[in-house]
Length: 420
Image (tube, rainbow, N blue to C red; front, top):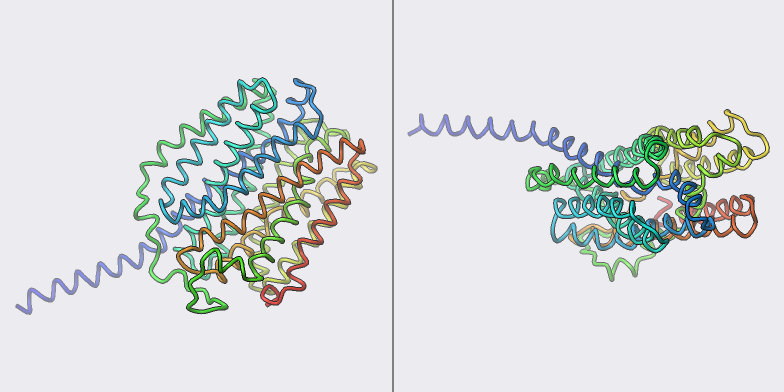
């Protein structure tokens, strides 16, 4: 009888050892999937700046009207964030990610046949914006939190860096497609690719991918043992502090980002060069994500985030100087400073929110906080276009962006739970 027990015990020990070896490997597989999907989701929204001028030229719309498409995409992504979090809690990642690809692919495909502003707003703004939210940081944060726990900030830095890679690839590629096939043909091709990617996504082993590692979410909470719900979280000052940080930062950054390519073209740079230069902000963003997350461990979260705000402000000032002193060095400085920080605070803010508001409803709560980012990006991009139409230049828009960035950093200066 003992001889039968011994082989069983050995097999059990070997199985446990293999399981321990497979968990890190599976965690990185999940990270790679989140990286790829976040890259697709972010590029779906961020390629719009290269479509701005061709659409304006065909229809003769004002800048604010055309930018309203981008604003609606950001608004739709923001409004969808709480719903994405709730859907993730209820249905899991397979349904959320597949729905996102179908919405983005279908929206872009339909946009190729648009003849009116409301049609582009519906297809590119609402449908693709909602789809991009399904592929974005809310779902990735929740999925990766099951695997990386206290290392979530670094994992999210990698995922946020994917958005930069998407920008780097998507912007110049979209400009090449527009030059070859027009903006309608470009949307049609991108839409078909997105729809095709939904098929391999559905057959992935999502039950295993969504299982997580035992005890992965082990970050301490400021209210240990508390089971947070959305209603109780909304009564906590940290919820609104993080929401306002997302909102005002979104206003300041996307007031600029929506019109960067048009700004550079009007400053004298050729369209493809302008699109490629802004595309290289993706490289800067990838480096910025990792760097700011490393600074989190070296300097502390608050100082790392404030450092990122300082770089954003410096980049905007360089962009303003480009109008009077067009220089490749100023352009490079803007791309490095502004491009590296357009989303670099996101992993740290995500980790802060998920550390404070732990529990079964964390997806819904984090999605509600992320709503601030979408609202800010929508209001900022629309306001930037409106200010340009009112003034005929970009000076007041740049001042508006700087003021909102200062408001965005204020919670990390005055809110006790965010100063730790």
